[in-house]
Image (cartoon, rainbow, N blue to C red):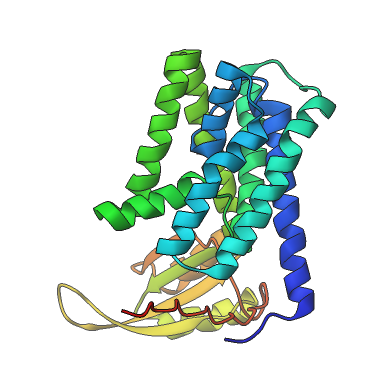
Length: 297
């Protein structure tokens, strides 16, 4: 395993702390005042906070402690566990204090759900990007997946559904519906942070004039193109496929080039969520992950 450079390690922990602080702000500013329990241990903490007045941060820490121990024992990963502990420590120690400092900007539950979900999603995404977790149901879902053989997505959905169901019983069905919206917005924000805000497109063109199309893409659009060898699924005949990545504003230009060269061509264009390499975001070398240690029999 290649050791992390001090600069990279410091950057990872700065982003980890920043993401945890954003999560605290989202809860203190938007979610807790409006009782939006959008799944997870933090959502459960909001419910218990309003039932018995217990501090949200302490509840999150108390529930997560046994989950962290179980996660370390059965899921492994010392670095993952250490960074998750840091994230939980920052969130648990700041969320209640921020609740006394930051006054709610809005008393509209929908606005609180929208902005709280977005801000918490950005915070969680920053934590996830540093190969850490905010703890809670993420660990519980992975344990459930391993024990019962349920997929990770369904495990996470099942655990969050229980929390949202409790919110419906305690706060009423309307608040639970807001919680579902918050859960969706948060999930999308996490994806944006991890996958990036790329607006690039990727195009695949099947044509008998593939070389001519490729030449014009390179000359006129200043984009690279790759020729792939394919075969028709029905006829079995060989086909040449042009693949290229372009900006959103170049889509119409590419369509014009393809139409000029081969009106009978087949073309598909889709969103490219992550584009790395020459001409785009530089490709950083991936660090090798540590192998889990096997226990002696």
